[in-house]
Length: 284
Ligand code: NAP
Picture (cartoon, rainbow, N blue to C red):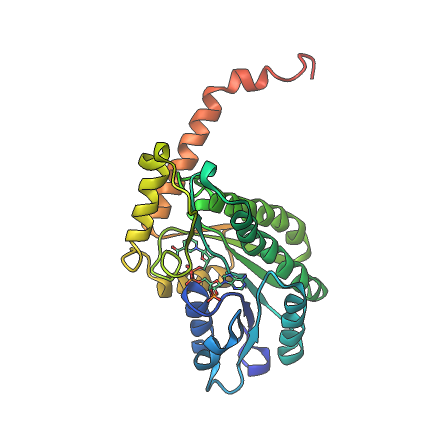
């Protein structure tokens, strides 16, 4: 990548108060690049961006607020001239069996995890298209590939992120832009702690499935095997690669889960091949 300061890559990252977003912003600054670190509470970013010769810019951004989305992207482009890498990281989980789910909570999570991500993407794309260069990193989850009991609605948001990102990659690839979908397993951030929401209702019939997973997830906060600093480093490596993947799985648990899911899905689809092909008109 370029070496003079005005030429260093500009990263724009959502949700930098804690976790992946914060570690990524820190590593980007450590490498001497520029970062627009955004958060709902910009006070949480003061120490992160301080003292880097103006290479760090802290901007208020709730991704569900369209005016803030437009304002943050404008502020980034005014300060640094462009955005090279957008990281749609802001997001959170909501645990509940499907039947236990509360409509307002489900819609609020979709507003952040899906519609917020899409709004920021739409705001950043015109600049990237004009320059025929840029990379969009969407933080999905192993839950974007696997539906676990107790996190059906979270999985629905991350499956939506996967579909949107895969389509986007096919639209922007031919004009020189790239998309990277990141699928972490459990990482030691605030995800399973202060950020996690749960439905108020518990139905006994789901105790062994959704209920047990709720306990498992709440219990492992702070003890997850994934290291967010190593994750941030891996994301930078994939963004910089000359041969980047569309999907980057992070952590052993996610690697085993995602590869297992893909294998069993292929076996199942192939086992029903005759029935599948038999659904076409005979002369088609
Ligand atoms: P985290 O430490 O809880 O960080 C989440 C960040 O998202 C916080 O900065 C939070 O801001 C922000 N956020 C939430 N809603 C927002 C909104 N409407 N607008 C702007 N920012 C918002 O957890 P994390 O693990 O780093 O999460 C980052 C991403 O990784 C999420 O998309 C999550 O789903 C995904 N992920 C995490 C794991 C894991 O195990 N850690 C696994 C798979 C995927 P506030 O401080 O204002 O709440």
